[in-house]
Amino acid sequence: MSTICVLGLGYIGLPTGSMFALAGNDVIGVDPSPRVQKALEAGLASLDEPELQTLITAAINSGRLKVRMRPEPADAFIIAVPTPLEAATSTADLGYVETAARQIAPLLRRGNLVVLESTVPPGTTRDVLAPILGESGLVPGVDFHLAHCPERVLPGRILVELEQNDRLAGGLTPACAEAAAELYRSFVKGAIMRTDATIAELVKVMENTYRDVNVALANEFALIAERIGVDVWEAIRLANHHPRVNVLTPGPGVGGHCIAVDPWFLVGAAPDLAALIRAARQVNDGMPAHVVERLTAMVAPPAPIAVLGVTYKAEVDDIRESPALRVAQLAVERGYTVRLCDPHVRPDTPGLPAPLLALPQALRDAQAILLLVDHRAFHDLDVDLAASLVSGKRVLDARNVVDRELWQSRGFEVGVLGATLASVGAPVGRDSHEYLHL
Ligand SMILES: NC(=O)c1ccc[n+]([C@@H]2O[C@H](COP(=O)([O-])OP(=O)(O)OC[C@H]3O[C@@H](n4cnc5c(N)ncnc54)[C@H](O)[C@@H]3O)[C@@H](O)[C@H]2O)c1
View 1 (tube, protein in one colour):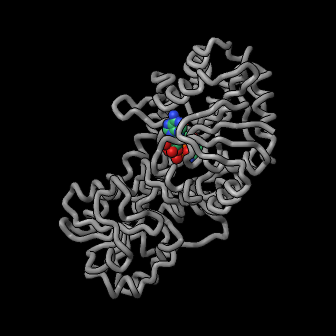
View 2: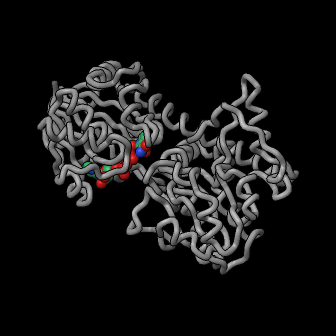
View 3: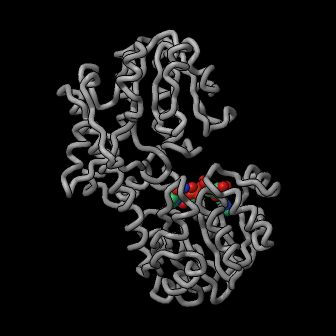
């Protein structure tokens, strides 16, 4: 068993550190954020993730998870800090990774292992991390092991996937890959595939780019279906009966800080070659404006509208890069009186463009309902409650969750992304097949 210092106690670092602790390792969890410190000192999960509270309570009670402001000497260091997009240049901001590396360098000892878990542009471990850690006087890959082990977990299923997913151990050298694989073996039940650090970095961003491009294709199909006056949801359902086709789900855009961000790391690596990747980003980034155009075709500003859903996808509390937030922002800019509603988001969350209210308050006297996130709570939305509260019976559904016939039978004008008003009236079949959600 080892002492493991985990830098960054967010969506990735906190569950990972807790898993290592429960596997019998002594874990020093490091995060400078007062919010994270305060929550963990009180034994509380700082994030809304299923089962995370149980895991953290168990890890803290085991006495093997300690929380600190700064890193301490350890056998292994895991870096799980943010790697956001630098807005002005659309390139990776590696500032957090560099700072973490500078904090680790003076603590490094011969035989240590340093693992970068953050998603980064290909080459970062070798060209950015290794030189900073090398300032310790120790040689990366010779005196200490260095590896990139990217995360593939799906928010909402992080705990299950941390344990079950296959994962990559990308070493600066084969021995580094082996050392990283050995460390993760303490709790990972999936296969651990050894490879080179730069390949591991490329694989991670390729995976998210693949998702982004395929969602962009579904979104482009939705736009084309609207133009030609048919229902894309019906078309996708039928297309997916082809044994080798799986069109993903259209929506108001792509968010989160992985799929909406990582493709830019590939564009940055080869701007002259990444035409398809760049175009897909543009299609997905254009969806919020399209949703607002559809809204405007239904009701003019400054009508009050209830925006249902703020997070970047269903059943998470994460609003980073959220297309729903972008739609709300654009609607505010266009002059609508916007009320937000999201059961997963706290009303005091910074950066919200409009007040976040409980469902009845958001719906009361609204001229239109804009459904942007397919949270379970919105699937179960009571049409009679909605009809009794709103003053304009209009709903624009960007996720195809509304029971169209039911809402129409209550007098609602139903708009659906990817379908024109005329085609919304047409019968839509349902398959047992579940569309693949991000
Ligand atoms: N969230 C996901 O589902 C997911 C999935 C795969 C990969 N990733 C990648 O993992 C990395 C981390 O993502 P996240 O979602 O956990 O981010 P996060 O923002 O939830 O957490 C990162 C934490 O790091 C802390 N931090 C910043 N600098 C630090 C430092 N020098 N020392 C210690 N802590 C520091 C921050 O205070 C923050 O709490 C990113 O590169 C992301 O792209 C995330």
